Image 1 (cartoon, rainbow, N blue to C red):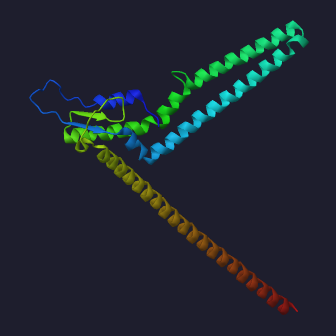
Image 2: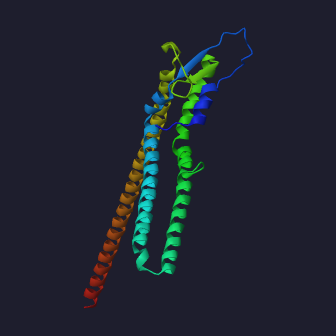
Amino acid sequence: MIKTKVFCTILTLFVFHNVLEAQKELRVGYINMEYILSNIEDFEVANKEFEYKIDQWKKEISKKESEIKTKREELEFEKDLIPNQIYMKRSKEIDYDFRELENYRNKRFGPEGDWLIQEKILIQPIQDEVLAIVQQIAEKNKFDFIFDKSSAVIMLYSEKKYDISELVLRSILRQEKIENLEIAFEDERKKELEEKRKLVLEKNKKRKDSISRLRELRKIEIKRKRDSLINIKRKIKT
């Protein structure tokens, strides 16, 4: 499971109303961040996607390493069979490939690499959501400190009554449920509007078809009358 040290540090000390108020009894609580995140479906999906990307990058690097190693071994095997100039040229090409691989490795896994960007895109928004809920609960219940039991903070003993993990988790899941209901309502609304639109289109089509049939019947009737008049005139002439 992904842990962000900075995030855990913030969680450890994020509620700090006024330490100098010695007269006031401090209210302290704690959470288990790992437990909370493990029960959030969005985090599980994001974490799997993050791990998949990391795994793909590692495979790319491993494959390239193997190719470079094979090239080096083949070159060393052919060293005594090829001119020194060709050997040096190919050796430099392999060294260049190795440097490019190191640059790629640093691009993906360096201190400011793509792994960090992906973590910020996939993981951090969910962590921020948890932090926001914790802050709301802390402010509402007037906590002075809330610690993360799963972080680097050493907690030799803690009473269960001070654990607000379930409260935080319920708040998040309730919020997700509300959002899902809103999405479902919106989808249902869109479906209803689409059905109404189809009905209107169908009625319009029927009306157009009806008008077309009437026009066709009128044309037939007009032609019939015209043909009848022509026949009458012909009979008169004859």
